[in-house]
Amino acid sequence: MTNNPYASPQSELEQPLPPDSTGGSLDSGINGQYDFEIMAVLKEAWEKTNGVKAAVWGAFIIFIIVSIAISIALAFTLQILAVPEASIIGALISQAIIMLLIYPFLAGMMMIGIYRSVNLPVNASMIFGYFDKMIPIFMAMLLMTILITIGFILLVLPGIYLSVAYILTIPLIVEKNLGAWQALEASRKGITHHWFKIFGLYILMMILYMISAIPFGLGLIWTIPMFITLNGILYRIIYGVEASH
Image (tube, rainbow, N blue to C red; front, side):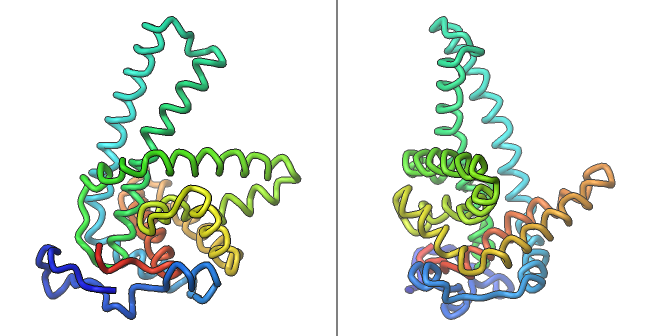
């Protein structure tokens, strides 16, 4: 890994992690050559929430506005084409377009967490940065949906397994430049080695998330950015983060 000579200057308090602290690599992750402590990951995610909240919430607001605009434009277009939204064709067209346009924003949100995991600068505009990966992300999400659905039909447990195993597919497409199927398999193989521990990590994070929503949802101001950051930390531990970012 090499340093990026074009990176913007950073303060002494917010330097990227040294090369030996940026986690594993694609090969080591796939081979299961990593480990972590659940409470240590939660603690780091909480600590790194300070400094990422504005970026996450700014990106989330942009995402909501764009999603509403896409829905309105889509409904208007289907009306012009005389395709009923409630019809099978209308529903399929709507779902495909929404997946195609919305998932790159999700990629940007996940990359905010990954950047934060190695103390790189983050901002809300990052959610616009990954539309060049629109097609592989769409294909991966389509395949993932089909496989998880089949898994739930087959006695539920395979669906639960794949829902966790595929959770890092999108950043593998964006950060490691993998194809759709390559990313799905890399995520599944890497996570499988510590599947139960990763499942437990997300269960605890979900409990924190639900508890934080109790006082009028005020706690979500912290726990949603914490969840985004936790994803980034887990990705860093398993697959590493290229220093060129």
